[in-house]
Length: 464
Image 1 (cartoon, rainbow, N blue to C red):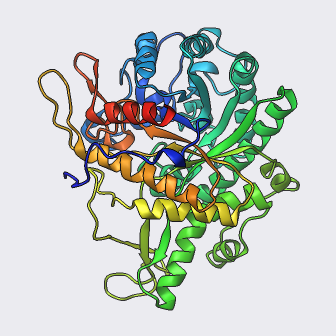
Image 2: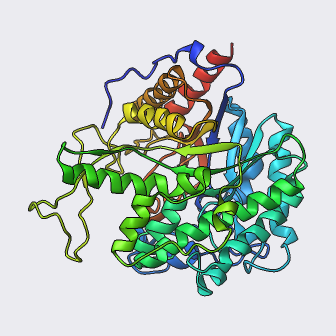
Image 3: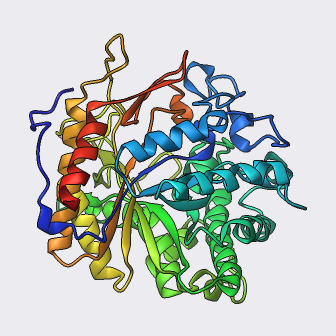
């Protein structure tokens, strides 16, 4: 798909102050490779990739972008893009191979070197402690549905914090707990591939508990200037029509996708309507005394990952309000919009809608866009260059949507493009490319795409 928007679209300078952070983002399992080197043990994604049919092409992250061995060159690449921030994640099984016990010095040394490389060229490291690569041994012990995993996460977090906090000021606990819980434990399309609704609800609670425990411990050891946060993937959930069934479906989708995370984080309680919905189906969050006090530990920044908004219907295609298990239908309705290679609708106006809603409903919480981007069917020239008008336009439209939200009062302080480079796209393997830098997986050659050059040039113009 090629958008009609002009690739050279300029962004409004006045909407972005000089303090605004511009960055790119990656995650450990998607780029690092070296899965069995220097003491790293398997994660749930190493295991899941070996399940027949789980990943397109039977792909895996064994090599990925070989970032573990090419890190200095990749930092130089990041610097060439003119960004001031690099968001990366730490691989838990590389730092603490069994998910418990002492640190693995060789594994932690990689992130020590990465931090120093970034700072040496003037790039701020933005650390995410968990981006889905749970040590397999912890999954064998029950995974995120098991309460003990929250405490193991807090211990692991402190191993990283103790090593890097003298140089890293921005700390994110979890990336997209919705994906970890829902796709991993209920739908089964992400690692560990389980299909158990109650396990997913328990995972939601224990992920949030792990966030709170880790935040409390890091804050107790922090120096002035450290900031802490969590990153949530969020969209918009609107009713497909004004019928009561569709409005209720949108409520349920919004509750499961956004409010069951932000309400306990910011308000110290799960939304009552969602508690009631769970009770009606014989399920519940496994809350124990003081859990919600821990979960609602104050933090300084909310990471927002946005890709698209959706409409919802409360009936199936035959008009039935209940599914085959007797539960209310919550059905996403395809929007009549241009779509990405992931078949996701392109909805920049709903990005503005989401950001303004967060500002209104959860006030006093600064926002940073920690992921936003798109996969398209890139066509590279023989030298690796990709003239990706579609991705360039996507970025321009969505950054303009951020500017529109700022105009309406939303406190948004940064934008990180997803992703720095093409990489292992989870269950899609290497079939989908999100990068603003093209990667030839045979040679590992990196080539900035048109979108990367556009991003670089507009950042420079905004700063001038």
